[in-house]
Length: 383
Ligand code: GLA
Image (cartoon, rainbow, N blue to C red):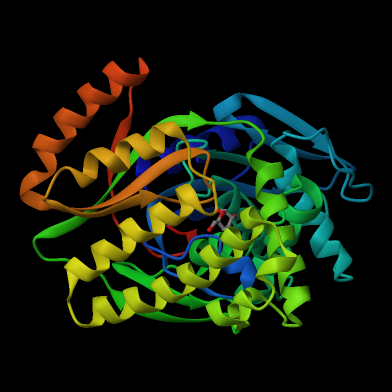
């Protein structure tokens, strides 16, 4: 989190509404391994980071609520008594969706004002959307004393994404953002919603993100399509979710599905296994194995699940050529955003310079490089 961001949001709120707000920080997330496994009831390995959304809230006694997004300098006005989705792609849907999902639980919220800004690069695959949803759920819970638990709030955020944004996401992003623990990654079982925290200290190594600065269109529909494939294969196998399938189970229906869909389901089964193996490697301090699993994850995302893109593949290929990088892969939903790299601290500077130059030469645009600091989840800012 960052004080300048908090002050900017607070001051903007006070300038606009002449009253002191309640301020919430909700972080973005990284994911070490376990991609596209969350909506298959499987394992993921995310962590909240020190970048996210700061949102300032206050009740108002009028018929109209006002939400102002500082970063795009855009305002929406609405009444909580008649919440409707806006046009697709509108940021307002993240806010309205959360209100609608709270109301669906039979809970009443009053009108309010909110101002927010963030420092998660948009489209980076670090879940600025979950951070925004969680900040709204958390802020309204505090403001109106709704008595929601953190777990209830993440499901509200997730449903907002399904019903107002149109992405049938899993629970990883909302969970990591809400429940993050400083310096820890969370091995989350997406069926039981129970997580085991792992203290992250890779000694001579660190996690580094490289943002392709691209976000290819149609990623939302590609995401939803893949989720449907997983669900229909689960149905064929007569199981609740692919988490319950082995490779041998999948083999039994191989002739009844297309090769493409077979590979997608196989990826999920294998990726789920990799997430479990990664936790073991981490417990054993075996970074070499962890790195191999991370490279394996990318290979599957690229060739089997087919959610990567040229820019991400290039960054991972470059990482592979550097023996100081034990593992690299695309992170998040795919089709752009960041790669996550497990790199020797001593190699960071040199690799940063080289990759920046090469990426620019190859694609005619800059990549951005971030070091990662693992942080606490959604919280109230009191000062
Ligand atoms: C997006 C979704 C998550 C998860 C990842 C892929 O970030 O929001 O629920 O499915 O993609 O692992």
